[in-house]
Image 1: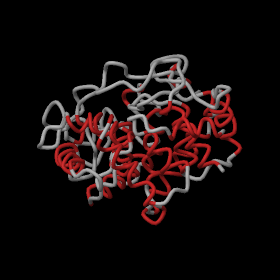
Image 2 (image 1 turned 90 degrees about the horizontal axis):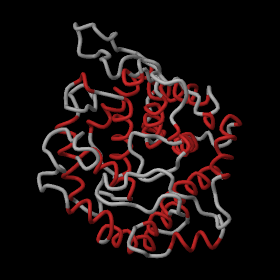
Image 3 (image 1 turned 90 degrees about the vertical axis):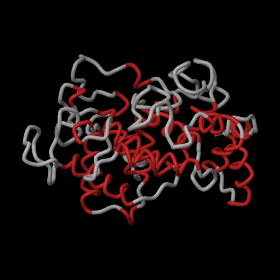
Image 4 (image 1 turned 180 degrees about the vertical axis):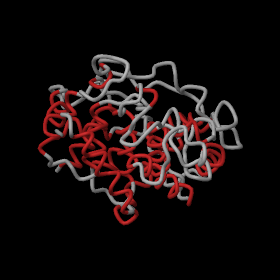
Length: 329
């Protein structure tokens, strides 16, 4: 990271990137961060998304919030978490998180598309737990959801799909252990695995049970069992990996990029693992001569607002890439 790039990220431009750059890339104290955090919540993207929230706590439609893509409750909460929104600064977030858990999480811990156990999938479970943790939300339902997610990875205590004698079973979406996914024609799905590992990376070590640690170990074995830079994971319905793996973008919803693999694994302490070297080298190779990264994938016109122009230097993508550098040193 050069000084020019650092100063570019720290420029107050109404995006809120300057707050996150100070928070994540510097050793600034809480007093120094307070004004930037307040401004990020008062102006720009966070304020825009929160202004669209129904006062009951949902976006677009009441209920579990998976639709409408990409402006429903699920996507709005994921976006807000990636923008740096936190409950302590805006209490509307607590209302939204409470509403979401009341409508999308079963009593057994499944985070689902429609609130029923049959509609749980890895990418949703991982994305939402990471988002809730990043926003500072605390609830016993989250602890139960983490335990359930760990069980789905290891297979412990879960009956096979089709065993209707118990609700603690796999279904057609989350179909088996080791990230098996019906949406991927049943083989393990790396996009889902990355989201699950991202969520585990948010959980403090003293909160990780033995079951969760076993699930993390399974996830590491899966993601590093293949060179992540190749993304040569089981493809299910296709013969080769999606090209989106190599397109670094913002925001990051269920489509995953190699940068997010690096984020999850470096946060879990694997920055020095030689199996991750090619991934970190790939991240570095995409940096331009000014120390910036380009926006290669986006949701232009699909979510509440846009975050830059494709193939142009982008502060959000650069922030994502530099966070990994900070975790790796």
